[in-house]
Image (cartoon, rainbow, N blue to C red; front, side, top):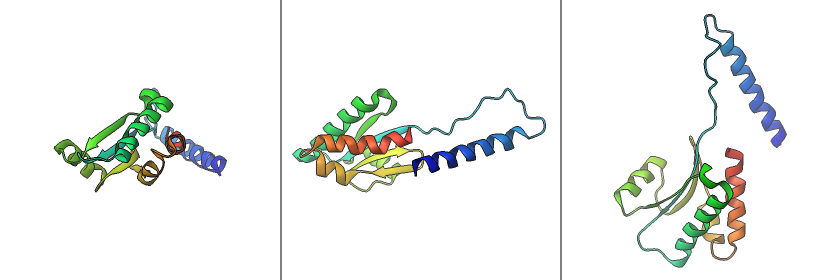
Length: 136
């Protein structure tokens, strides 16, 4: 399935490249535009947090840093503060959430975060890796 998706994307990119280069008067030295979107991971929380809430932030932040370094930023936002409320509105978040964002695509892994952060951090790390890697 992954191979089929790859061929579809490559076909679309080749088609776009061909159709754009056939335009009359187009300067051939123009830079190539990439379709890559920046991937970011957000953790939204409130001021009062239990041990599991804190573990979700800690384990997720460490996993993102270890797996992707500076390529993928991890940002925590307090929903009780104005900047947290503003970012939550921007991303359409209504409460506590662990969210992977790339362009218009948003992947909500909140359930997995709360399920695995304390009991199986390696599983949460794998979920994070499995969801971010295809976006890069």
